[in-house]
Image 1 (spheres, rainbow, N blue to C red):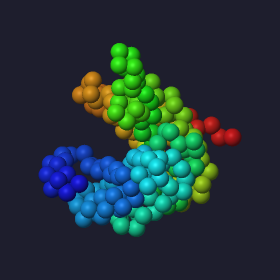
Image 2 (image 1 turned 60 degrees about the horizontal axis):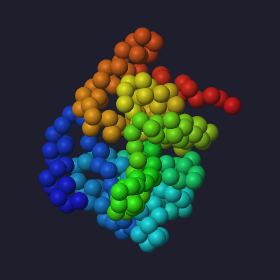
Image 3 (image 1 turned 30 degrees about the vertical axis):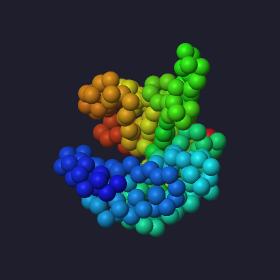
Image 4 (image 1 turned 135 degrees about the vertical axis):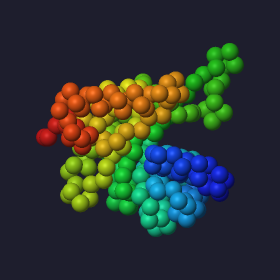
Length: 234
């Protein structure tokens, strides 16, 4: 973390887009220490990754259970005044419950989903490919699952009093502007794109241009006008 703050962060802050620091930790103490260091830095926003394993809880990710999620977000919230986005795990049995626990603990926004837990087998060696056996799976295949979770969290958020709602950022399998629009219409106020950038470095520009043309064709003046249009009121 000190190396990142001293060397990488200054270069990031020179770029036009707003820089967001993704903070992960192996236990509660490391999360808090990392947040304290970032609070003293010039980074404007922190994304708290609670999908990392909690060593003291036998390796279970903080984001898998409501109480653990509330605990780590509350602890980090106490040491930073910066906007706090909490990144949720798709492996939680109750993603909506975890999301609401994070909001109650002081999250300013939520981002979901992180990678899906998966395994790959080396059939020649007859053993798992990864040293940790399980690894994170991402890309186009997870989009329908991630989209459903974003939809569910936004649906639950809309049932809260207006002053308690926070924005949701959609993540998972976005390859093109159509995918991004799906997330926005599901209720995401913004999206994150990761895997697609490895195969197509221009994908972000293509997505932005595609959304702009779609908005003109549909008569939308702002992205906010599209946000949540697919949410069905029950």
